[in-house]
Length: 126
Image (cartoon, rainbow, N blue to C red; front, side):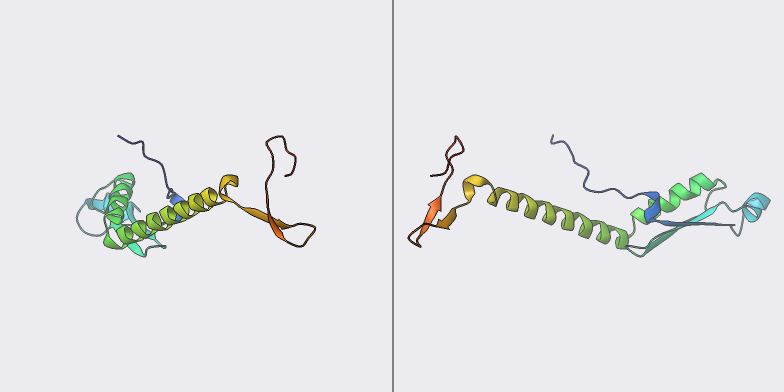
């Protein structure tokens, strides 16, 4: 199996995370504490909330999992991966084409003719 390479990473600073107090069943703890989570990913426009648990951490995990499963986020992710792969393949192609063995350098000689310029292995001109 081929080893996977990390194309890009998404960090906490890429999201807008806000906490709020929940409504409904769950007692005083749920109503009085800011344990529900809303996560927004501005680049894709996806928004998800987590408010089914009493724990702030569990609600944050649930919101993040829900956000990643949304179609808006999946489309954004696919576009980002395609951009990066296209850029990499373009850079690799340019690197290959610019290799010394793939370049033909010409220069004007004394009689104003274009001649091929080559360098010997010892560094002297031919």
